[in-house]
Length: 321
Ligand code: ADP
Ligand code: MG
Image 1 (cartoon, rainbow, N blue to C red):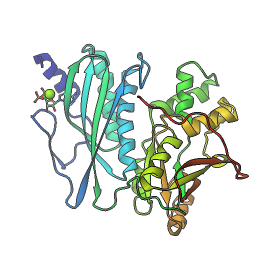
Image 2 (image 1 turned 60 degrees about the vertical axis):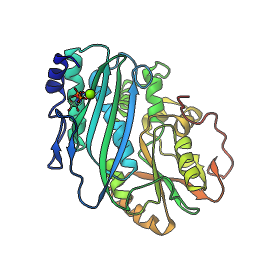
Image 3 (image 1 turned 45 degrees about the horizontal axis):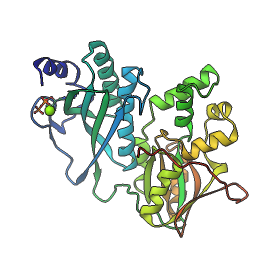
Image 4 (image 1 turned 120 degrees about the vertical axis):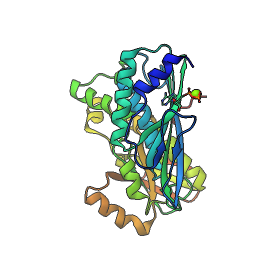
């Protein structure tokens, strides 16, 4: 690596985020040295954003940084883990100072908000690619895995579904709506909420969880497969934002809520004897979540409407290959 790249790292990527006492050594040495709390497991996740695949080529650097960290935070949330440290592998076509200043400001803001620190990474030249590895901790035995759903469990989703796909349609000029609703949807795309607080709130009672990045049906399908159960979703109960309802007709918005990507909400399952507790958190405003279906014996994910009639859906989630 060229000498001026060391100064780039020193300038933009040291002191990024909120380093606590658990960071013994951050950016600058051969490795970071981290001290997870005694009795907790390390939860580790990586997500990569490619220009022109995961965001439009001309996107603002600040938003790219925020989104790159947010999608990793969403995985951490889905595990019920507390985010602590992250590494950044940054590939960029050139070292543009204005771009880097904006990028590191966005990264710093998001990292401070979620109380985690940049502790190392790698910097290379090439097509713009941002790969972040986020590390967190979770008390042994409390991690929210995908394989714990049982017949009779109720399925919940946090927040609203379909906004991510709606936002992408706005960004790509395929959906026109009021300026206010377009702004709301774009904000949802660029700054996914990363349901970290919710993940911590539900880890005591949820039987399984996943974050919805590839569409509800695809991601709930992963819970169903790994838990060896089936799932029924009542499409009339799906939580949809008012902005999405104003922007898109019933068929389009339901398709987006079921199969659109980029929502970064959590989908989780709750055993019957824990539902009252879950509902209390919702009523007290400590958890924003909606019951959307049931886990059943069998396999696969089916959709029904409020009359219990089958609801057919066209496609099921984004796949890279
Ligand atoms: P090495 O040659 O040992 O791999 P590098 O020259 O790649 O080290 O990086 C020097 C230091 O800067 C290391 O501590 C590394 O973790 C850190 N670093 C490199 N790139 C980044 C980045 N994009 N963000 C944060 N830290 C980085
Ligand atoms: Mg290196």
